[in-house]
Length: 133
Image 1 (spheres, rainbow, N blue to C red):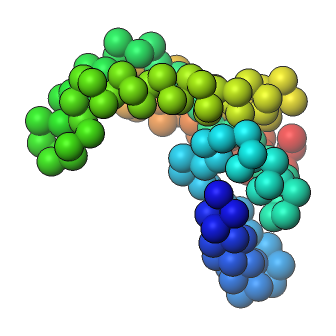
Image 2 (image 1 turned 120 degrees about the vertical axis):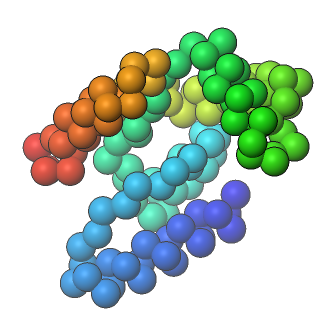
């Protein structure tokens, strides 16, 4: 965990230093656990928000199984996907819940058409990106 946080800190510091002390970052899939969230916010920066794509497990299962048909990923099978869902609910959802209690979650309904998801993401993150939150 500390290695991940350190790598992020180094990469972000490099960008900030090159841009005169400014920088905005979208970090995909992190933090996955509460200790990562706490360590990151203590040692790097307080996250402005979490972008959460919300979809029921059955929809995600269908999408991932379909992806597995062409992805070549060994873990895109029903058994592995169920395990990943379980791990997500146990370890990652508490992070989302904490950020949500703090008013720092942009939740997007991911079952909509891609164009609508895109529009919802744009409008959802705009206040954060434009510094109005």
